Length: 380
Ligand SMILES: *Cc1c(COP(=O)(O)O)cnc(C)c1O
Image 1 (cartoon, helix red, strand yellow):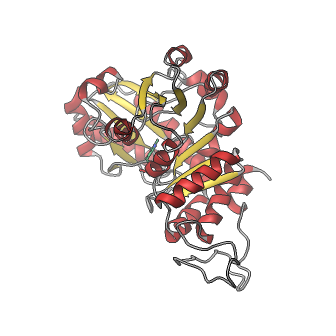
Image 2 (cartoon, rainbow, N blue to C red):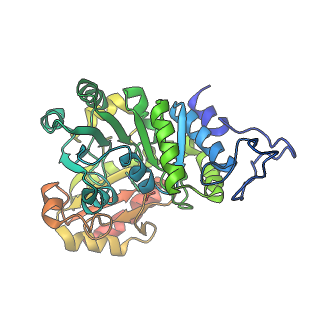
């Protein structure tokens, strides 16, 4: 089955009792047993639920994975993965990860005896040099948020295998339409399904996909134990959005390419990060390992912070909003919004300057998006 067909049809069969095309929402906490020790595969919704299971099977099929587990958020998926580790373990992490991930590592998990080192994972040598005796996990985001840095997954897999590290990839920005990390040897692919996979700003959710049964069993156990589950209704809404993923991603990428080219040629824009621009440092690797460049762009204005603020306060079509990956174009100021909790010094060291603007290009007509940015840039 081709990917497009899997996205539309993977696990969906008409409902057995009514023939309903859309599977029902199993909004239940518990399930009646036929007799002691005999259930119908479900006993309590914290452990499993048919609406969640359907989504897990659907996502696994799309990602080319044997197993999927759906969580209440991208962050609870990340947290559950970290619970595979023990006191004293060390994690190597891409230096430009999602702000909520570094907040969780730096402000919560360090108190539980885990150690983190952030490296520019675009450079495999930096990753190799960060390995210590207690390193257990290599955690990669590609493209990163918000600088859209690209990491070579073949190189990461080599390093992980040579050093016996668990290898996880946050693939939220790529989606399985453009990149499938398990095909590059990753042990775990993780998504915030809040973003492209659900696609319409309708839920908060997360997922992990794996081919490793031991990891799957542990993730199910951890999830069942702590209760980081996606609700049946959220799973249903995610499923509705998910079925048009390939169409949306094609349009996100087509629009983003046009917007990135427009911004690159604009006199008031000093720098554009988009892996689909040949001028981008990640272009060559992105072209090799991705089937498309997705819909996220970040750019810097020559006028610094005041110019950035002017653009963000003067857009009319684009929404000034946190989050990304939905049908509407959204514009964000990472330094004061998504990455406000990354210490200023660290932000600047990472190249996350105060004038940086992040754009999640939606699926409106590209000319309308460009016109909106163009009028907002006028007074900048
Ligand atoms: C949004 C996001 C997360 C966190 O997901 P939530 O669903 O908001 O908890 C993690 N990683 C990346 C790359 C994200 O964009």
